[in-house]
Amino acid sequence: MPFRKPGDKGARPTDVTETMVAGATAASMTAEWDADKAVTQLYSEQYRPLVRLATLLVRDFATAEEVVQDAFVAMHGAWRRLRDPNKALSYLRQSVVNRARSVLRHRAVVEKHAPKALPDAPSAEHGALGELERAAVIEALRALPTRQREAIVLRYYGDLSEAQIADAMGISRGAVKSHTARGIAALRSVLEQTT
Image (cartoon, rainbow, N blue to C red; front, side):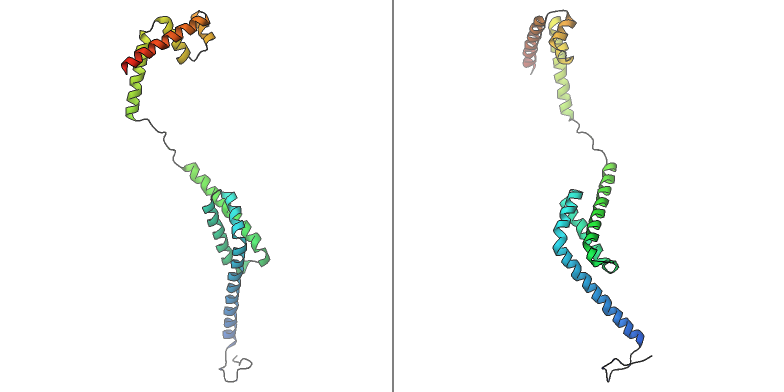
């Protein structure tokens, strides 16, 4: 049913539906403006505390900033559905915590399925030199007298104490010290000549 707006003397008659649509558009623009204003104010007041909260949760400042920014964007988009605008900060905190949990779950999955790094392998040159050194030591050990060789092998390869070596060889601890010292001196002399 056509009607004139109050105070419009020469205006064309408008339909009730047109008036309702125009009013709804103005209301949605006001709601959007209110959301912009409210979110901007919350952002200026709460951004840093929320980033600190998120940093403590995700242990990474850059990711914490992303989490908080995403929470603000989501809140802005859902402003109309927010039942109580006074609880916006509570909504933001909950959103930050939930998003931080999501980040941590994602990290755990990535870490669980990440390929295992192979241990560093020594170079072929290092292996060849090591083999030569071992061969030289073994050759030098073979050249030692029996008691010196036994004392050195039990001490450095068997990792036995002097008392254990004395028991194994059936000699005194003093004799173990003497044989070990003479054997080391002889090995040193032979190995210095080969290098």
